[in-house]
Image (cartoon, rainbow, N blue to C red):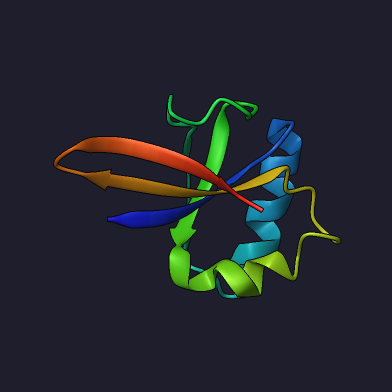
Length: 83
């Protein structure tokens, strides 16, 4: 399964983004940052990869540090940073 992960430089940035995305109707979940992702404050927002282009529009107005494609399957977990 593939997920879009958003990482942040602080917990405050995570909470601010969580509030805005929920208010705008995104289906998100805030989780501890997976160990495969090292650039984070410790909390990550997980959402559908289908929302990538919509969420990229928030890059200038929300403190999102990085976008990640996170894959979990029978071979294990992998994370790849998205430009």
